[in-house]
Amino acid sequence: MSVDAHLRAVLDAVTALPVETAPLGAAIGRVLAADVVAGIDLPLWDNSAMDGYAVRAVDTAGASEGAPVRLAVIGEVAAGHGDDPQLSPGAAVRIMTGAPLPSSADAVVPVEQTRAEGEPGDWAEHRVTVLRAAQPGAHVRRRGEDVVAGERIASAGEQLGARRAAAIAAAGVSEVRVRPRPSVAVITTGSELRSSGAPLERGQIPESNSVLLAALLAEDGIEPVSVAVSDDDASGLAARLARIDGRVDAVITTGGVGPGLHDVVRIALAAEPGVRAVRVAVKPGQPQCFGRLRGGSLIFALPGNPVSAAVSYELFVRPALRHLQGASRLHRPRVPATVDSGWRGSADRTQVLPVRVRSTPDGLRCAPAVEPRGYSHAVGRHGAAEGYAIVEPGRGDVAAGETVETVVVAW
Image (cartoon, rainbow, N blue to C red):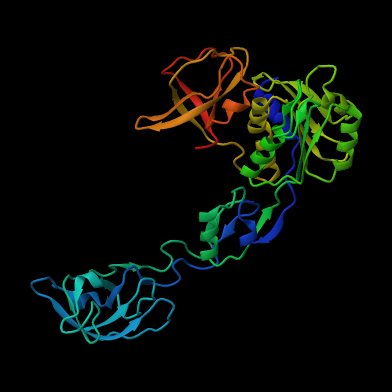
C-alpha cells in the first residue's frame, strides 16, 4: 500500500471533534472552527504615530531650519485620554503616540523636528518652534486603515497562535469557536523494555518510545491522558485497550505489529473488526495497524523501532490528529534542500531519511543524521535530526548536489 493510499484511508476514518466556544486566552494553540470578524475598526480613531505636536498642516507651510514657524501650545493629549482640544489657526497640541488626533488637526510634527526655545527640556509648554513643514496626514494613523469592523481577521481551520490571537483581541473579540484538543493514550509494548536508568540484563533495553510519543504530542500541543508500558501479553493488552476504548479519542501504540509469533498488538487487534493490519510502501515503518476500536476510539499501532515510530507519527498520526481538530493544514511544509552527501535509496517505496538541516545563502542544505543503510533502530543518532528527507518511489539513490523535498521538524 502506498503512503498516499494509507494516509487517505486514515483521514477518511477521522471525523472532526465537536465545536465549542472558548475564551480567547483558553483557545491559544487550538484550531478555529469558525471565521472571526473584527468587532471594531483598527485603529478605532485617527491617532498619532509619533510623540510630537498635533497641528493644522497649513500652519506649518514653509517651515525649515532657516525659517522656522512658531505655534502656540494650547494643551496636551496623552494615550488613553479622550480630550479633543480645538485648534485655531497658529495653535498646536502636545500629543503622545497612540493618542487620539484632535478633530481640528490633520498632521503631527515629531518632537525631534521642533525646538522648545526659552524653556527647559525638549517639550514646549507655551510656544513651539517647528523646523520642518508637515503635509496633511503626516504621522497620522487613520481610523480603520488596518482593519475595518466586520472584516474577517481569522479563518476556520487556522491554529490560533500568538499573532492571530493578538489581532483578535485588538479587534474587540473575547470568545472564539474552536475544536478541543484530542484526548490520546499512549501504550508502548515489549517484554524487553525497562525504565530508563534501571539495571539491565542481557536482552533488556531502556524504554524510550513512550518518551518519544509523549514529546511528539506535546510539540503539537497535546498532553496524553495516559502513558503505559505493556509486556508481550496479547490478552493483557486487549484488556487494557478495552478499558480505555471510548474514553479517549485516539490510542497510539508502538511495537508488536509485525507478522511474528509474539507481535502482541497485531494479535490483540485481530478480534477488532474495525482495525486492519497493512504493509505500507515506506522505509522505515512498513508494518502498521489502524482503525477504530469497538468503543469508538481510533487506534494507531506503529512499529516499535524508534525511528519507524517517529516517521509513522509524522506521516500518518500527526495529520490525523490535526484533522480531528478541524485544521485546514494537515502537514508541515515540504521545502527543497540540496544534499551535502548522498545515500542509497529504496526505489520500490518512499524513503524517509532523518537529516540534519542547515541554512546557507543559497538555500537549505541537508545531510543524513543516521547511517542510511539501516536506521529504523537508530534512536541515538535520530536525536540529532532536524528534519526528514522524503524520497519518492522510483527515484532510487540520491547523489550529493541533488535536491530533495525536506520536512523541517526542529531547528
